[in-house]
Image (tube, rainbow, N blue to C red):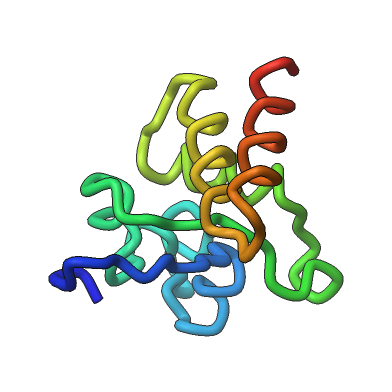
Length: 112
């Protein structure tokens, strides 16, 4: 995946990944600690790999998109609001829709 010329976008669901991969240990069992132990996420973020931060079964994990984005920024000390905007805009670029719709959605985010 990471060495290919054309990168395949990754959908990452932080809370779900921490819980299902058992990344949060009993003695330090919080989501931020667990997310820091994710096997690839920090590298993907650092290298600008195409990634979309999402939720997976929000009812079960009691989370939403905003919480997942904040969790990622806190876990990896990404302290500016523009990081969240950038993650959201990059997520839009990964959807299976026309360039026209992607550009429209990105434009709408910039207006907000």
